Figure 1: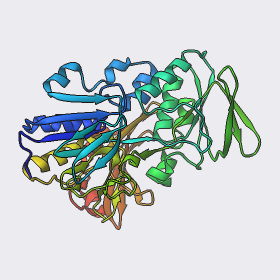
Figure 2 (figure 1 turned 90 degrees about the horizontal axis):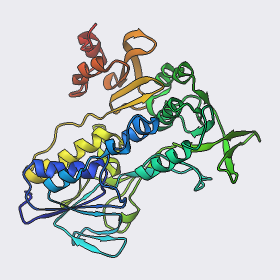
Figure 3 (figure 1 turned 30 degrees about the vertical axis):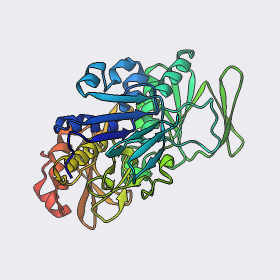
Figure 4 (figure 1 turned 45 degrees about the vertical axis):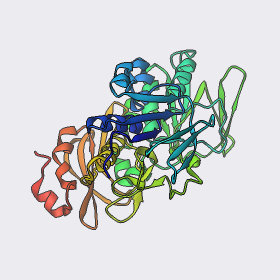
Length: 402
């Protein structure tokens, strides 16, 4: 199925995946109409810097902009911002917006991403860090605080650690409240979590593990008492929650698409012949026969390219190798592949406690790479994931170098 000049691609979701879809369509020569729908009023922007450079005060918000006015003009793009979608008719390829406007296309790309998961006792006074609105609101509160003021960070995963790092750089005192024995154990496994376990202490950030939170109470000044199951409290000037994300698929409930922790797609990102899903919202097939949903910046970019190539030429994309990174506590963590938390892992290149490379394996086949401050060694080893490689062969070839 080749896209033609009379076709109209409607992209629902104006984040990274939606914007990359626009860029890929034009880069591959599509001359037809493109309409980009987004529920935020801001044009497409990059989210990773929000919890890093922007929150730390190193970047202005303008540095996150992906879709400048000039790029929008070059893309010949019709923008519908500030209004979300509430229904997709797959049979007729129409998208109904929250204001009841109906957009009719010939192809639809779903790129509605994910939203921050909320605590069971969520309050509007809590802070999240998913959108420009979130970071503007949080920075406004932080600007009211003084050096050394305590900010509670609920969740010690990637977002929580990055937020804590940025808060510390602003001169504040983050206290990270983690439910598990070690942060990141559910994502990277207990062994790697142990290897990374002393990073907060090294940087001077207080991490409290095995925390059982019961709620929070705000006073009129905006300060908060975090309540624990044992009856104790933590007094803080603000509370930031980073406890995961969930796919934005509710608007597709009666669309006829298969939904299971996201929009279920095939290897070409298709949920239906003329409907694709990309980025955080897509549940795509993995090599072990399961479907996975991966909330990584690079995956969103790769998905957009794969879908557009298929629609433009029928070409299927090579095997996807997920990649993500996190800058936290003054260190850089990078992961290639999609390892399971219970995979075996071994260090193969180690300079010291904060410079190492690890290999994950499952059934003696390399399933992923994890690096702490070893970016070159990680990328030199990417070939181990481009085709099935046994752990013995990987150790023998040692592509990471000396």
